[in-house]
Length: 368
Image (tube, rainbow, N blue to C red; front, side):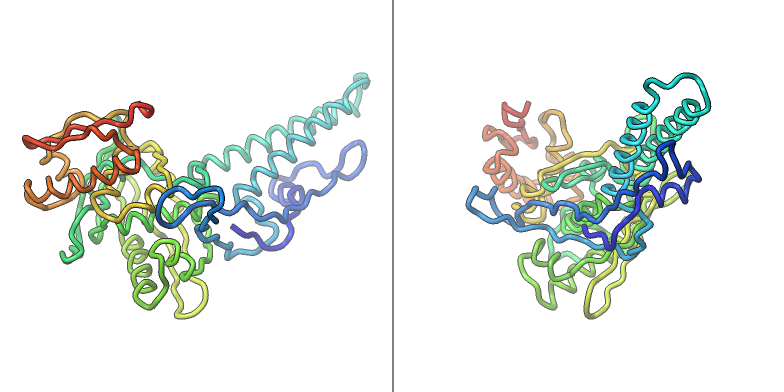
């Protein structure tokens, strides 16, 4: 992620909070932010790279709003601000040493309380306005997306349904979530994971720009008219998809501008954080997901990550969970192919079996 211009953290916080502008030692120093976040390390396809192989990076995004005063739009900016507040609080504590009771000591303690309050507010800002943190080698999603037919498994030859309605399972005690919108498949799920990954360190609702060529190359391994059109359709479907809660609704992608030339602009719905409050966050390995072909293998890959352990399952149950409409025999054959892939990648133990209408499997012993 790139941020434009330099940012005076203290100036921004003081303008917004009306805090003290001076200490007993004079004006407080200004700290400048002008750093880029570390790019995400990942490969687009294939096995984990060796030490000699270069990493193919998922593309970075740039903020549309380049106002240098908007320091809280990035996770890095908030953390830098919080660290600065904590450092000033510690310095003020040092200055109280040796001071007797009096106006100067009371003024310093007032500053200490102010800095502590501002640091707590910044921590709260991270909780309320940023997605759960995940690293450059990870994809992140609410668990419910990985254990439901939201991003279903269907043949590419089958036409997509223009409108579906799904009841998504939620944690016990949480209100129900309903999906309404165009049929979504595993390829749409990959684009959703990618958008969440690329926007993970910006405040939700903040517009960013991306290079469609770089995203196409990272996800599809090519860039041409077809791949560009494919990416656009994926994001448009996400934009049309609606997650309906008891008292509000959330778009899976809030904003999407796609001019014929130049950068595209996207933004996530501010309320998307609420999904993680209804369903716990689940992390999966970015490179592992990209190494598999979209379909049953990728749905199972995420499903396995979302489970503490694997138990025997009826094929009909698994078929319904992943959204497949294949017959039992056809689904069983596709399942065998997918499980073989997962075992090859070390996601499940090699001792899996499919027979008598059920699958028996387990995670690798080292993962139990």
